[in-house]
Length: 160
Image 1: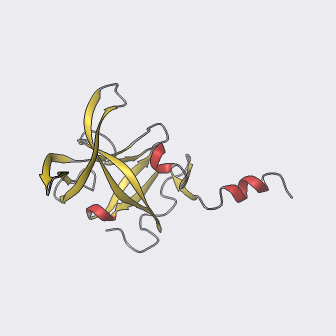
Image 2 (image 1 turned 30 degrees about the vertical axis):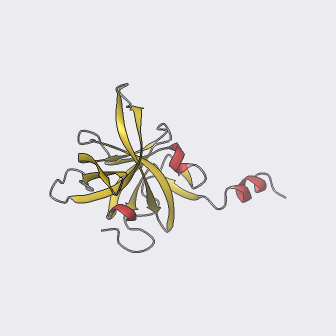
């Protein structure tokens, strides 16, 4: 057995990604969004605006809009999801704010799994979405020196 064989076997089911990748949120109708794979962030965050909490059949929901493409405000995806939680989240600037949290599917390449996603306005930020450690764990290995390892299209065809 060569050195490192156990480690290779242990991590063989993980998908190797770059520090930024094109991903999809199929449950929200977002077919393509550029995400930063952020090992420094605990939670995953999606750029959302016009965030509105409402009740439907006794359950809490959130309605919001997404600009999935950076520097392009023409394309708007309108989304609704059941509200999973509301949490105080500290931003990279140190500011803490109460954010809605939803559960939704994340697709990276051909891999799909459920993640928790906080919603906040990221208009001034470089990425519309951050994928944090909770979503990365047990699914992805990050190559910090590479971008778009999976390409600008998913393994399932164009994301657009």
